[in-house]
Image: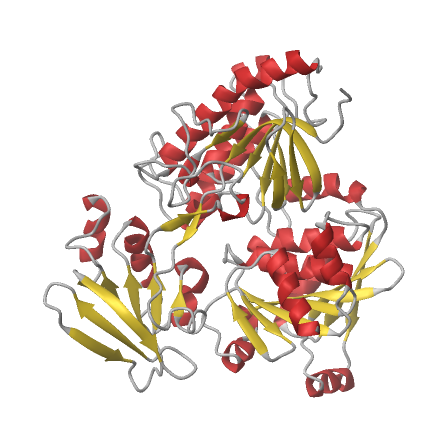
Length: 561
């Protein structure tokens, strides 16, 4: 069998604690490992500001903890890619994954895809999502500054997010169906120390309603049967409802290829093996009694070590040589055993750390042609930040052409009259075409990856796209403008931004704009946006919530038809 560069010993789908743990163990065993993550590495735990129950770590944020895990995996030679798996062929001895970065093959696969927030289905939940109903305090909490909010749920996530929301909300009321909180008593204790929080047990929400925003809600006490309605204060006009009612396993996209229970959780044995040879599960996506970081990393370690024997047998059976880890990332066991620690990301007073610059240096050679970034500036403080960001990018590679242009007063008046937004970072192809991938703001935080991938997609053939999706995008014949409203702290926004921009890179009739709402409050007010991600299509249709490339392509196809 011919060994190709996209054949791995192990591919891990999912970059949360379970996937990172599997990557550490498999890469340390000197196997060639690839981790695929469609959004951001770290998973759900990255929105947790304080982790105090992970053994050996007295206190850390979820982001810091998983960043350390990722560096460990990289130090052992694991490779990482931001990509979505669209389909899988898992039956053969060599597994094939069809992804947004092309076909990837592996002898073994670890499914560590986690779970997504559960929706309750109460009246008005769907209609008011993004206009008062939200699912992530980190992403949307700031929109409710000075307002009253209701938190639905009594588990760990609800308690932690409820406490977090006290940073913004005037008052937080927790609505809990059970007789008590269902999380650890030590966690629940913190609620009673918050003067802004009121708790109503044995209570559930029946309805959320209003005109354009949530301005009233109905509740019921399940013990007494009493029902009541809460209306927003006249001076507020609205309030927030944050739903934290557990999670749904992220397995629907697997289309029945791996055995799951009726609730959708992967069925695995004591070694984390699924019903398919060479396919293992790890983390919250599996049937388990406790869903915590410590159990997720345990699952990942067990899955990886169980796979070691299987992968070794496949090497012998298929007469494969040892697959070589990515050049420059392979480490000798002797150095690992001496306790060499991975280098920490260096501090920087600018926008790009030395570590990020090194990563970019490895990406630029993959560009098939040059790409131009043009900054249209207007003299504001934001424009100054964007100019500084572009200045740091300039000179990193001869594949990047960075230019700035100061808008004249006449141009600004004309753009305002035409409804255009500025300042802007526009991405063009080398031949001057394009310019329809636009960032209004510095693409930091979770959107930095979106920006880098946008450059990659305009610098050549870009990320691979499923043939059906590509045909759907190609058939868009009318001009469509999509503004994606984001918060740089939002973990769900990048998938929408990247999906929209991928379509725009394939079809110049689609313009994809990213707006950091912190800098554009007038757009938040115009469309009454209280949650991100939010898509505004042709300045008319407003859609809230996370959507993948396929979903966005279908939406735009319908708009064009």
